[in-house]
Length: 436
Image (tube, rainbow, N blue to C red):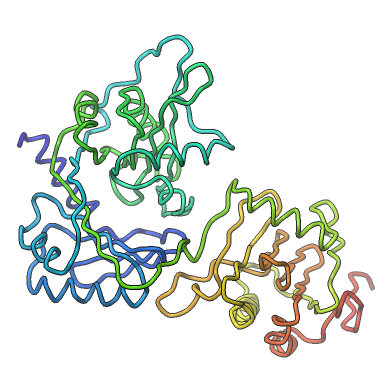
């Protein structure tokens, strides 16, 4: 092992292995358990740690199996060639199945060659809106590497200070040939290639250029990535080495699945350009006769609804709003049916969805939706539009609709905020005037 390789491996061990993220990926719970870090995604989970694992390995592994089994989450446990041989042996005894070995590679970004000129008609560029599904299919057909594209996308844009991701595509005469997906790992000196569809040197060079040029977007100036890490099947390794990477270890993912059917989707998801985001908006606007241009006049409040004033809340950190949000969240959880998705929507801005039954409770991801903003319209609504909230910042009002939700929040919100402004869209008191 050369000096450069030893330095890169040491940096990898010190910064990436057993890392506690600065902020949670969407829909995930991260827990430290002694020397281990567990990440629960709802659909599956991963176990990470440094190379130094000591003590009762069998007991440690058995405890992880019990914890993941209680959540019905399969486990992924990555084993490196410089880990203790007892780890792989203990995992096999515990019925874990090893996957194919891959090569762990790392490079100093400064040593990765700059992108060279491409043949006429070819270019490397960031992916475009509308190409996601095609790229996901291409990525799914690629061999296992560091991290699937769908997992990076599911982490969302708020993966922590200094984090971001991009998919770069190699295009020829308007046709996408291959792609690489790369992320900046917040709180570290690393960017990471999640995977590449085929070993294209031009894409590896472009990934290095992206990390050096774009990685500082959410990072404190002067704290840009210095290293790039990747995992590759043997057929891809020569392209990485030619691009300035060093082989620093071998790695294999061990897997174990408990009895039962795991969830297919995380309990929370950020919605950027997904079709479902636009579809729910279209149905909401049609059902409640409202657009961004008419929202200052409110929306068609259904018969089962109540609206309260929030004119005293002029700051988002007002303790009153925290109480309102807690009441509404409890009501939404209580009124949720199995399989419900709750959408949080803002006009012309990304939205999100959560499973009210799988967030906000002990050991669950945080409740990421909200009912009111002091400077923007916000909607919460179930997929079937039967219940939700409409926060009208222009009127300083909050409308709660749906019989199931009202039954759980009406009394508490009235006690907190005072007389109801409207019921079923009709004034019932607490008239507010901005004039004399």
